[in-house]
Amino acid sequence: MDRIRLTYNFDQSCYYDEEKKIRFEPPVYEQRYLIVLRLLELDFWKSSFKKIVEFGCAEMKFFTLLKTLPDVEQILQVDIDEELLNKWQHSVRPLFVDYIQRRPTPLTVEVWRGSISSAHECLKDTDVVVGIEIIEHLHADVLEGVPENVFGFIRPKVAMFSTPNSEYNVMFDGLLENGFRHDDHKFEWTRAQFAEWCDDILRRYPDYLVKYFGIGPPPKDHPEDIGYVSQLAVFVRKDFIDELEALNIGQAGEREAGASNAGGSSNPPEPPPGVSSDPAQPESKIYFDEEAREIVMAREEEDAEVVEAQNEAPEVGVFRDDLEDLESPEEFEDFEGSDHDEPNARMIDYYIPVERSRNDSGNYDDELLDPGSHEYKLLYSVEYPVQEPDNRDRSEKLLDEAEYQIRRLKFIDEDFYNYEENQYQIPLQLIADCMVQQTPALEELRLVLTSASYRISEQNMVLVTGEDDSVGSEDDFEYDLRDDDDQAVGDGEDRWAGGEQPAAAKNEEPAQGTSFQEDEELWD
Image (cartoon, rainbow, N blue to C red):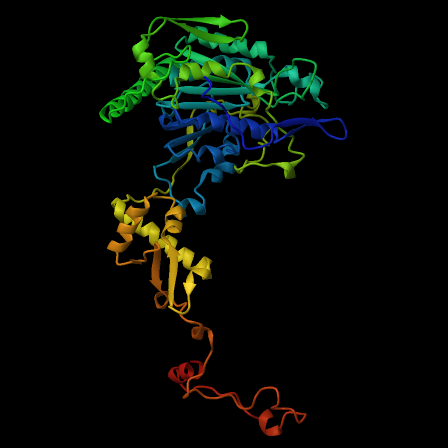
């Protein structure tokens, strides 16, 4: 469990401004996007997510981050407001940069009008379902159908739902008369109410586990336990956990065999408590932990030898334990945030889309909807550009990247050029350090370059003749006229020193070539 940590690249703070109003940096909606993205990016499972469905996508702002996942191959953007989807469907089209820096794997994006509570063939084989701040916008009959559609029909490996925490509302000014934050909210739940909804899902679909996260912390040293601005539930299917564990054991076995073949005899470290490693899962018991306030699983003790093999790959980890590690809001005491009133204070690596400005999360009042609007309808589909297959062998890849770095270094630093010898002298080690796509050893790079007729000195300098790329000697920077070129009349400064321009010069017509060939000779 200790191996699973959500890291953030922005300052995590909640504070009061000069007017004593609570502020977050970055804004809470950015924190929601980033936490969901970080969870999907976790190393031990990110390659398992090929198809992602986002319900209540609206203007498709979160898609900007979703498409950065390198292993995803299909993204469905689903919302019930067809007019809104038609207006913003351009947001999912490939950008110019997507054609220059193409994806290594195919990506198909589809925009669908449809309801989160309605089943459709397009939702089958989905790995991840995402619903960011959507359930509070649903009418009771729609909300009641969500578990059956998501956990009964779709059955994703992972499902994530976030919703406001009403206990935090005491910190906000400007609430509506009913105490809600938004005029389209049908309800706002406390942490206990949200947990009750999640527990009901687990009772109806016991092949899932749930983990809670907090988004948007309270001010430091706040005396009351009000939780976080938003609460996120991450549901994970048990058999998917088992697959991850089995994969982890297989990788551990391969490493152990490799160590044995290499003559290694070091004893494996003692396994941490609670680590499971049996691919055929023992009988387990699910119960509600009052202290942690979440569903947990009690497991029987596994075989010690298998546990040792499991710990040969500690960086992969066991997902069941990872889920139970991030269990309480105390894990987020260092979580910082800010309101979007302070945009200039953000420090973040990602481009974060602006907050969604729709009237709701894609569930408008029934009287405003066409009775058939819950039926699914494909509005737009696009395939992203994909890289061409790279059939080069390793030596060809090394040579291509090394030559690129040689050309780059020649032009960014003139100190590499020796004017006396008319050649560039670039350190071989520097070229190797600059290579990103391939990381060769120095001797390997030397062999590749010498095989391509590059000269390398005893001091490990790559020698490239200057005449090859036009820098040349110092004389090349002089603008000398050839003997047969026409010379300018006079010295420029003294030509009209006598005062006015002579009449003959005034009437002088500019020289013009009578043919294209003469023009070329004139301007040569």
